[in-house]
Amino acid sequence: MKNTALTSTHEALGAKMVPFAGFNMPVQYEGVTAEHETVRNSVGVFDVSHMGEFLIEGEHALDLIQKVSSNDASKLTIGKAQYSCLPNDNGGIVDDLIIYKVKEQTYLLVVNASNIEKDWNWIKSKNDVGAEMRDLSDDYSLLAIQGPKAVEAMQSLTSHDLSSIAFYNFIVGDFAGIENVIISATGYTGSGGFEIYCKNSEVKQVWDKVFVAGKDFGIKPIGLAARDTLRLEMGYCLYGNDIDDTTSPIEAGLGWVTKFTKKFTNSEALEAEKLRGPERKLVAFELDERGIPRHGYDIVDGNGKTIGVVTSGTMSPSMNKGIGLGYVPTILSEVGSKINIQIRKNAIPATVVKLPFYKK
Image (spheres, rainbow, N blue to C red):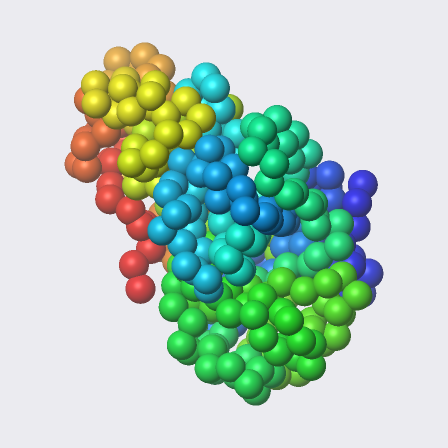
C-alpha cells in the first residue's frame, strides 16, 4: 500500500483511512454529509495526491497526444487544460484524463490513480513518433481546494489574482511560499475552487498554510467519500464505475470530448457508432420514492426484466433524494423516461433527468 506525503497528517486529524487504488487514503473525517456541505457552502481541501502525472515533451509531443486522446489537443494554448479520454482498440476507454499545455511542446497529463501503470504502458505502446515521456506520479502531490469561498480564502497565499483563473485554465506561479506551483481550475465538485500541484517535499508546507489562511472561512479537510457524492451530484463520470474498458465514449455521453476532426485510436469505429447511434446510453435518474440506488443494482422495466445497471448511486446530501447514473437502452434515455431500480426485493420507480442533478 502506498502512502501520500500527507498520510501521517490525515491520521493525526483522525481520518478514517481506507485502501483506494493501491493507496492509503482518507475516506472521511467528521462524516460524509457534513464534509459534502462544507464544500457546497464554504471551502474544503482534498488530498488527491494518488492521481498520476505524466509529462509529454518534445517536437512530437502533440502528435502522440493527438494519436491517443479523443479530444483535439491542437486547440490548447499555454495555460489551458482539456478534459479528454484515451480510447482503446475495441470501442472502450483506457482512462479519462486532463491535458494541460504547460509550454510549447510540453504537456502534463493527469490520469486516474488506479490506471497509472496501465495508462503509461498504453501511451508508451503508441509512441512511435519519438515523444519524450516522463512519469512524475511518485514525485508530485495534488491538493483540491474546493468550494465557493476557496478563492477568497486562499488569495492571501499568492501574488496572482485567483479569481481571474477561468474554468479549465491554470497558471504556474507562487503559492504558500513555494514557487512554480501549478494552480488550476478543473474542479470535480461543481462548487468552484482550484487545484495545487507541487512536489511531495513542498506539500506539507502548502497544506499547513492553506489551513491557516482558510481558518476564518470554516475550512475543513474532506475525504474521498464526499468527493464521490459531490461529483455524482454534477453527473461527472468516475472511471471504473461509469466508464471503463467496455464502455464507449459515445454511449457514455462523452461525444463532446470525442472530436472526429483528426484521426486517433479507433476513431473510425467510434465515428461509425456516433452516426448510427449507440444501442445503450448512460443516463441520470432520480428515484420517485425513498431509497438509495447503489453501484451494481439492476435497472428493470415495468415487467421486472433487467434492462441495465446502476453504475453510480447515492442519497444526494444536497437534494435529500436517491440519485444515480446507469446504462439503459437508447429508447429509454430521453429525459422524462420512466425506469425502475431494483433495491433488494422492491422495484423503485425512477425518472431519467437532465444533468447536473445539483443546481446552485
